[in-house]
Image (cartoon, rainbow, N blue to C red; front, side, top):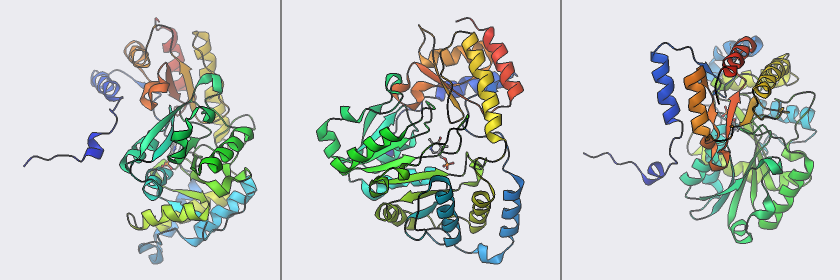
Length: 388
Ligand SMILES: *Cc1c(COP(=O)(O)O)cnc(C)c1O
């Protein structure tokens, strides 16, 4: 029998890191010491009190059953209280908060709730690849909003043709941004609210990095903006804030009808998140004034070492105000892929070529600061010896 995959799988965009992955494997086999700056996954461990809470909660038989679909009311209440403390936004835990199995899960499922085949979904490029794929899985048509340096890596909503905007159901935005590390301020979000109202588009704000910001900067929630909750949903994650990527816990907050639409999809696909993990999530949200102690200082130190080193070798990079990424222009004469290959071959440095995040990422590469400072210093020493 011939196993034929569905068109939705066949139509997936090509996997652009295949060549890098192959080369990485080849060099590892040769015993070459690679410094991997490609991974958007914190290297530091989850704080002990969160782990201890999981340990206790996992032994409680009441947690051994199917959890509720929408999440424990205790977790959702902890989210609402955290949201009020952090952003000054009041949320009804019963109708405006939904537990997610990681925020990626919610992002991937939301088009199934609101997008009919042939509807447009507005997605940023470069961007987190899930926005595009989730759109395609729902039969929607991605419409790309390029994020350009001259616009501060914010989409220009006024350049979206009216007939596309009219036929769009969702608008994905993500600030602080992966991969560009750009941030958005209030006037941009206000423009988004006005656009959403005019065209009746649901705003999906991915706030995975809301707590990873530097030099005292505190990112906004989209729900703090007047009218934001009337048009939007915001995705939050415990992954980057509390070094919990492996635990799979996040949440969505926003307009009750948008939240319930996503909840409807989830009810029919998954059966909720292990309650012991939700208890651990409560511990995190209640115990820590996010960010967790020292985390920001550590990333700031790493950021400063790498930015200085990059500038010394003549690479163009801005000092990010948030996220643990650096978004760096490739030198003249190279494509993103060519330069990433050069760094791997000449210096054993693994970076992510920008075109992997969409066409508008061409001409850039991304470094993740998820490696300790001494190793980053070593990476810079190696970089200084590369000929480009
Ligand atoms: C890491 C990341 C997420 C997903 O995080 P989860 O672990 O699924 O909660 C979502 N969006 C962006 C932009 C990310 O970088």
